[in-house]
Length: 428
Image 1 (cartoon, one colour):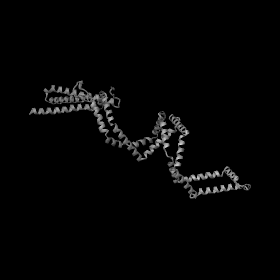
Image 2 (image 1 turned 180 degrees about the vertical axis):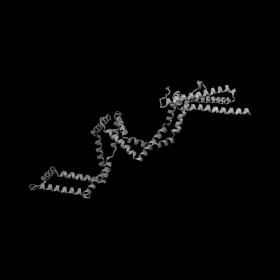
Image 3 (image 1 turned 60 degrees about the horizontal axis):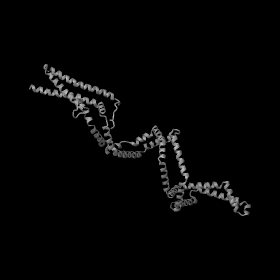
Image 4 (image 1 turned 30 degrees about the horizontal axis):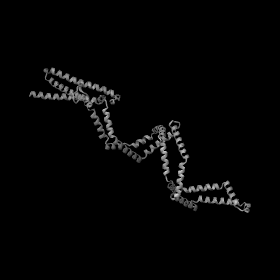
C-alpha cells in the first residue's frame, strides 16, 4: 500500500500565517476564559446589586456560545479533546466520500464539453506560437534543442529498420509512377509557356558555334573533298562550298533567332507538340520510358548514391549537434523565426490552427475526463489528512477562529436580551 502523500509548508507566508493562527487561537481561548471568569464574578457579586445579574447573564450566554462554536470548529477537523464523539472529525471521517465527490464535481462542472469548448476558444494558441517563434533567442534555443535530438533520431531510424522501410516504400512508389503522361504533361506546359522557343534559340546558337569552329569546318571540307571530282579539287571547290554552307547556315540561324514569327519556329512547334502527343498516347513510347525507369532504379550506383547522401547528411548533423559547425543551427533558427513572422501575419492560418487545437484538445479532454476524475479521487484518498488539515487550518483557520469571537458576542447579547425580558416579567 503506498504511503500517504505529504505536503510542504514552505510556501511563502506559511510561517507567518501559522504564527497568526496560534495568536488568534490563544486570543479566542482567552476570551472564553474571560467570559467564564466574568460569569463567576458576576454571580458572586449579584447580592450586592441587581445589575450584576445582567452581567452574569451576558457572560453565561457568551461562554456557552463560545464553547459551542469552539466545538463546531474543532469537530470540523478533529475530535474535541480526543473524545470519540459522533459526527466529529468530519473531514477525516469522510475522506473517501470527499475524494469521490471532488473528482465527480471536476468531471461534471469543469470538464464538460460546453465549458471546455468555450474556454478553449478563448485561447489564441496560434498567436502564442507565433510570438514565441518570433523571439530570436527562443528560436535559437529551439534550434539548438532540435539539433541535440537529431543524432539520436538518426541513430534510431537506422537501428529500427525504418530507413530500409522508407527506401523500399520510395522505390515502390517510384516504380508505380507512370512517367509517360507525367512527362507529356510537363512538356505540354513547357510549350504552352513558350519556353521551348528559348530552347530552340540555344540549340541554334550551339549548332552555329559548333559549325563555325575550325575543326568542324575542316572535317566538313574533307568530307566534301572526298565526294568531288578530281577536276573540282584542283580548283579548291571544297573550300568554296564549305564557306557557302557555313555562311548560309549562319544567315538562316540569325534570321530564325531574330524573327519570333519565323516559319521555322512554327514547324518546331508542330514537331514538339507532335512528339508530346505521341509521348502521352503511344504505348511504345510509354514502354521505352518505363523500361528506362526500371533500368535506372535497378542500377547499384543509385543505391550507393543514396547511402552516400545519407552518410554525408548524418555526418553533417552530428557535426552540427556537437557545435563544430553553426550552419544548420543558424538556418533552423532563421527558419523558426520566419515561420513565426509568417504565422503572425496570416490571420486565416492562425484561425485554422486555433480550430485544430480546439478540436484536438476537446476530443482529448472528452476521452480523458473520467481518467482525470479517477486520478483526482485517488490523489485525495492518498493524502495524509493530518497534514492536509494542518495546511487548511493555516490558510483558513484564522477566519474560523473568528467564528468563536462572534459566537461569544452573539450568545452574550442573546443571553442579555433573554435575561432582560425575564427581569421585566418579574417586575410585572
